[in-house]
Length: 289
Image (cartoon, rainbow, N blue to C red; front, side, top):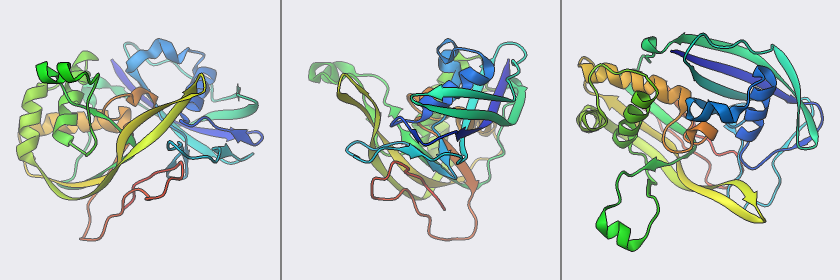
């Protein structure tokens, strides 16, 4: 099995009205470049939202202003996939239509390696930035919850140990092997091995689409958390590096195949104040340090 990550550049050929959650454009660009239906990829692929510079483009619930792309500006996106055999080759460039606008997409960079080589060098101190709304599911419902009637529960604050448990389950379901970790074991290890140094995170409500005149929204968190990795030598630490590599390419939590839970990691340098996403809605929440 191969892990395939492509960086795309997407240029509107005239001013374009973007959907509220712009991964729909990324999926259309993928179809034009690879000649494949994104629906056939299922959860083995992750399509990011569009980025203007380092700002992810999506709308928050309640925002009135349309999300626009200007003629000629370069927007960027990421596509990550798991392939059972050798990955297919895309066209170098393709023109496609989204809504009423024509856009040109090209493959700017490609990374391909065997899934057995999946690994990220994680510094002992690092910041993890949640750039698009992240929804980490809470497992189980129980009799009290069933009586109360909630269909699903998500953490609205960052919980990396819980996210790692879900990633371990997901990686195993997709054939990405770990040395020792099961979801329960990596969760218990992470509670001991990851120290939180700082954070700035907040919940947001993203507008995904409008169906029959009704908004479809998702509630998640954005921002950053700074961590120190206290265990760097054990087999669980090595599995943690593999899971972080998986997360940085495919995202964290629910709906990451359509751009939710997009994360980035950076080393933590000398002490300084880190700043999370802007407090005012703007369709482009981001975390920075």
